[in-house]
Length: 189
Image (cartoon, rainbow, N blue to C red):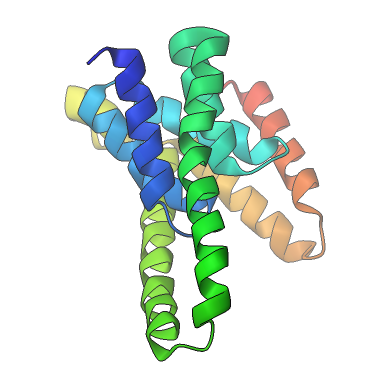
C-alpha cells in the first residue's frame, strides 16, 4: 500500500475510533508518529499548538496539517476527508437509530461507558503534551546530563502563564495564546 493511501487509512481509522472530539485524536496521532515516523513527537506538539491557535476543530486542523506536511494540498484534502468521513457516515446512521432507541437503557449504558474512556484519552493526551513541552528526554538520553532533561524556557513560560492566568482568571484564551506565541518568538523556542 502506498504511503498516501496508508495515510488516508490511518486518518480514517482515527476518525472512526477517536470518540469525543479533536483532543481524543491526539493519542491516535501520537501512535501514527511512533509507528510510521511521518512526523516527530516535537512536530506533533507543534501541530497541536497550531491547531489550537487556529479556528476550527483540532482534529480536522491536525489532519489537514499532517496531510499538507506530507503531500501538499492533495494530502491536506485527503487526510481531512479521511478523518471526517467516518463521523459523517456514523452520525447519519446514529441519528436515525437514536430516534428509535433514544430511551433504551442499552443506549444509555453505552454512552455512560464511553464518557470515562473519552476522559482517559484526553488525560493521556494532556500528560503526553505536558511532558513533551517541559522535558527533553531525547536530549537527556543523548547527553546523560540531568540539566538537559528540563526545558527551562518551557517550564518558566508554563509557570509564568499559569501565574498570569491565576492573577487574571477572566482573561480570554486568545490573549494567553498570543502571549505564549510572542514569548516563543522572543525566547526562540
